[in-house]
Structures are given as structure tokens and as C-alpha cells.
Image (cartoon, rainbow, N blue to C red):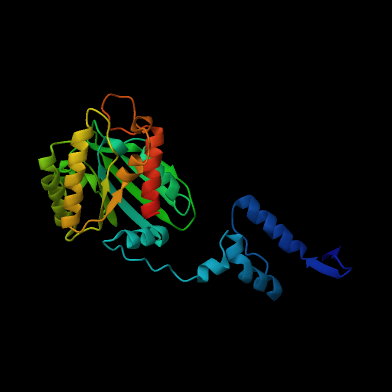
Length: 289
């Protein structure tokens, strides 16, 4: 038998004995690709392994015994929705709207980026040409253990009933809550019936009402100032009559001394520029987290 002497820190002498035959058997096993039975380990080594195997796998032993998070119910009011968005392990959000939030760098995208402070966030974008979901998404990695998925079904020029006949595609997963962001397009007389059409379609698809928040959109410049004002009055009335809470983005834009400084110079008077989109996202963040 061969003998190997090792002096451990502290001067403790340990002796390890290896059988030459065992060494040769191990070498043969490696060369032939066969697994040899590993030599037994001491009870101290086994105890150490058992106590630290989770750490070796990159896992926390504390985390494995931590109680599961009990999801908070999404209510039909903004405070309960805000709490659930901030704490639930998974959150699915459906945004149905128009061109004011349909692109990267606009309010839905900016809000998703903010939510990544406490969760990993995926934002899906509606492809206006194919009228289907774009394969390109925005992913914002955030705190581990929580995930938020936003299905941003915003379509340029859309009135509020646009999603009603496309809901199976526009809501591919049951949302925990949805945001309706309409009001710039269409005649004032159409605001209430088009919002109702989509709300009823959602209730039918999911077998019950989904918690909903409406957005009172940005103020508009010319030539759409009057139409937007009238449409927003109708939207506020619909929301009040149907018990739908409202996020007042309009008030945040009204606080800007010169509305043209937060709108794109595209002759429509309705599309927020980068500064306007940030005001919108900040307002939604203050309401919903």
C-alpha cells in the first residue's frame, strides 16, 4: 500500500491511504468510459455536503423553506390593483388603446420599464399592419421571483370597440386587470357604446368581469382640442356610470403651461412627444405602481 502524508493548517497530521489496486481500477474505468463506484467518504464530509448542497447548486437553503407568497386579489378599485401589481408573483395586464401608447418609448413601454424595479417585465406590442402580436417584445429584467407580462394592444386610429371583435387574439391570456385608453378618435356619441362593446366582449370571453381602469387621456392641441374635450367628458361619464376608476392623465397635461411643448409636431395635436409620454407614464406609475 502507498502512503501520502498531508499536514493540515494548524499542524494537524492526516494520513490518507490509497490501495494501488483501487487507483488502477479507477484509471481503467476512465479509459473505458465506465463509471467506477466512488470510494466511501467520512461521515463528517457527508454531513457537510448534506448541509451545503443547496448552496453548491446556487440555491439558498433559506429560500427553499420560505413560505410561498399568497397572491393578493385584484379588486375593482385602483388601490387594490396597485397592491396586487406590487406584490403578486405573476401579473398579467391587458392594455387596449390607440396610437398614444402603441410604440417603444411611449407610456406603456415606459411604465413597463419602471415596473422592472420590482419584477421582470415583458411588454408585447400589437402589430398594426398584421393586426396580430409582433414577434418583437421588450424585456426588462428586474427582481428575481416576480414576473409581469403586459399585452399592449394599442392600435393607431382605434375607437374603443376595435378590440371587441378581435379579443381572442388581443387577450391571449386572461388578464388580472385591463386598462382602456381611448378618447381621441371617433365622434363623441360613439364613446359610450364602443366602450360598452369591448367591456361586454371581455366579460363574455372570460366568463365574468375583469377589473378595469380607464385612462382620461392627454389634452389635445388644434385641430382636435374640442373633439378631445367632448370625448373625454363622455368617457368620464361612462366610467362613473359603470363603476370604472379613472387615471387622470389629462390633469397632468393641463398642468403644463404650454401644451405644445409636450406634443409631437405632427399636425394632429394628439400625440405626446418624449416629454409628454414621460408625464403620462409617471401619472400611471403614481396610480398603479
